[in-house]
Amino acid sequence: MTTFFCADLHLGHATLLTSAVARPRPFASIEEHDEALIARWNETVRSASDDVYVLGDFALGLNADALERVFKRLRGRKHLIIGNHDHKRTVRLPWSSQPADLRRIAVDAGGRRYDIIACHYPMRAWVRIHHGALHLYGHTHGSLPGTRRSCDVGLDVWDYRPVTLDEVLDAMALSDTWPEELQGIEGRG
Image (cartoon, rainbow, N blue to C red; front, side):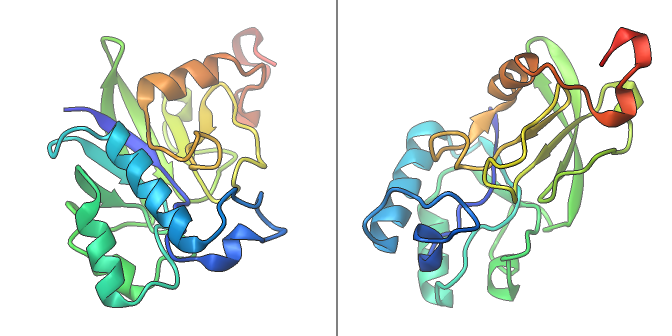
């Protein structure tokens, strides 16, 4: 079993393709967009027993039947961290755990257990930051850089696919920035 993270799929959200707020996505139509994201998800998530944490903005604009059809096509045990575009019909899907605004998750990677604070929104400080907890977020579509302890797991940042914690840790290791709360501690920042 592998644990994956992603955010900001925006399935069915046609205005995302031309939005000035986010980087426009390189698809000719929302149907092409949705099919590409489903394909990338299923190329990455290989097993029905893999856990996939969606850190918000799963879908917007799909009717209940279309939403359910798309949901069933995606592999893995899906968990939702609620984002600003996740309305009742999204929250009511048969997620593998109760949708929540924030979740603390323990994940093994590289022979070690990590404490993850997952939220749709990026935070400047979070619980257990001084004990090594990492923060994963979405919402910003790659416009807010991560730090040595935080990372945007949005699809815009990761070639439109979910990512493993090992990939996230590699990205964090490349950052020169520590979270503000940790700057100046132990020679950081």
